[in-house]
Image 1 (cartoon, rainbow, N blue to C red):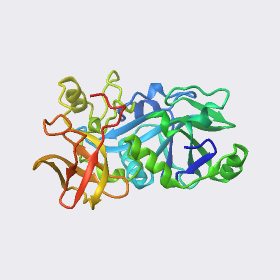
Image 2 (image 1 turned 90 degrees about the vertical axis):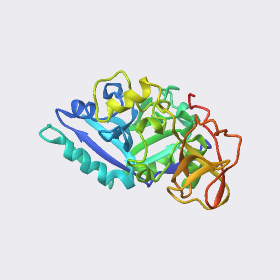
Image 3 (image 1 turned 90 degrees about the horizontal axis):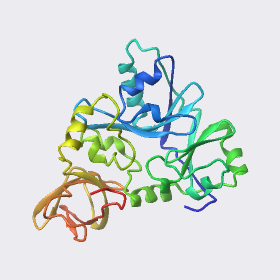
Amino acid sequence: MKNTEVYILDDRSILYINGEDTKEFLQNLISNDINKVSDNNSCFTSLLSPQGKFLYEFIIVKHKSGYLIDCEKSQSDQLFKQLSIYKLRSKVEILNLSNEFVVAAFSYEKFIEFNEAKNIPGYTIKYREDPIVLDPRNIFLGARLIINLEKLYLSLKKLDLNDSNLKNYYSLSHKLGIVPKDLNKLQNKLFGIECNYEELNGIDFKKGCYIGQENTARIKLKNKLSKRLFPINIISGDLKEGESIYVNEKEIGKVLIDKDYPFALIKYLDENFDQKLTFKTNEAEINIKIPDWVKL
């Protein structure tokens, strides 16, 4: 990612949550600790099923008296409804600001040029009144400017940033081993902890209860994390969502995301798994590389 490149993430949506009970409301739902979120720090987190299965993931950013929720557009309507269901009698207001705000990503190197910037995942500064967040998952994904659509292009011009091909950003994310899109295909297909959320700074094991916490903690404490979500590189052929992955006729995983930037749930502790090997599905030959940041 070059210093002058910016990617308009038009596949992202922005929700806004505020109100007297907002902090407690979010703390009881999400896998991370809302107390980490401040004017100078944002966090990556997830909303899981009661069984600890993946449902939604998003970045939370402090903004004025509430919190911005940066989520994938394909999940935003469902997430809005889910949060509204959990709201009950809480003094919380949930707004969908997707028609007003946009997310723009640019390089880590550009972010560090700001005087107040720090080399800390999730570190947040302001460009005038708009937040810029160093991606809390991995700093090499760069920074994210969340800004009113009406101010976007003038601000990018003043920052000397040029709109670039979004596919390059997706490719970078896939290469790093972080799912860039099609998150809805993962819903209820794997546990949140199998999405590598611990390494992506998306789980806090020291906070109190939240939805899905019991199974998440059990998998962690009993060392039963035997499967993980890893990126697939296609050598030849076509992938199909849900099909099995084999090596030496032994099944070692399943394809969960098949299009463009594919990912699979892999039995990475299986004696038959070796990332140096070539793997097969019904119609494809593939490679599977464990990201460098994954703790094995």
